[in-house]
Length: 99
Image (cartoon, rainbow, N blue to C red; front, side, top):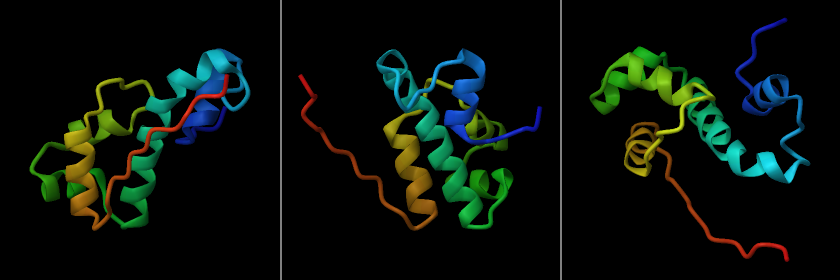
C-alpha cells in the first residue's frame, strides 16, 4: 500500500471508518487534522523538518512527532511557534453543535 501523509486517509485505513461521516471518529480526527495542517504548512514553505525545527528552537524529532497522525499531544503554544516561524497565524473558534 502506498504511503500517504493525508490524515483522513490514514484514519480510514487504520479504522475502516470514514472520519468525514462517522460521528464516533470526528472527535478523534482533530489530532489528525492538526498533524496534516503542520505537514502542509511546512511543505508549502519548502522546509524540511530539520529546518522548521531550527526556526522554532526544537529538534527534528519533535516536528516528526507533531506531523505524525497518531500523536495526541499537540499544544497550542507549539502550534503558535510553528505558525509564527512560517509567517502564519493560528485561528481558533467555538461553534455551536448540532442538536
